[in-house]
Image (cartoon, rainbow, N blue to C red):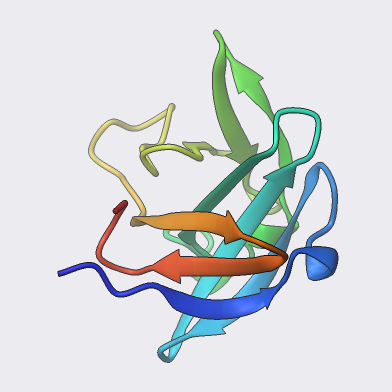
Amino acid sequence: MSKWIDVCSKDDLQPNSGVCALVDERQVAIFYMPEDEAVYAIDNYDPFGKVHVLSRGLIGDIKGEVMVSSPLYKQHFSLKTGQCFEDESVKVPAYGVRISGDRVEVNLNGAA
């Protein structure tokens, strides 16, 4: 069953950037692209640098796939799936996220 957790106000999001939220004791990196009204959520933990920093990475795309570049060693992770572009054996959890009214909600079990 889907469990949507209210995390923050839409106004707390940084356009074209990431923020970190603590959701049920888990650090979640939330990225917001207002021009597309798109919002993405992946785990904030960088498995290469072994620290929680992905919310501070730069966002962009690789061959049309929206991604974040880790601020440490520059690996790229899909914001849709959490898959690392440089190493297919590495993947961070991706979470369901939505904007409901003016609130941001995260589902740690995936999308609705």
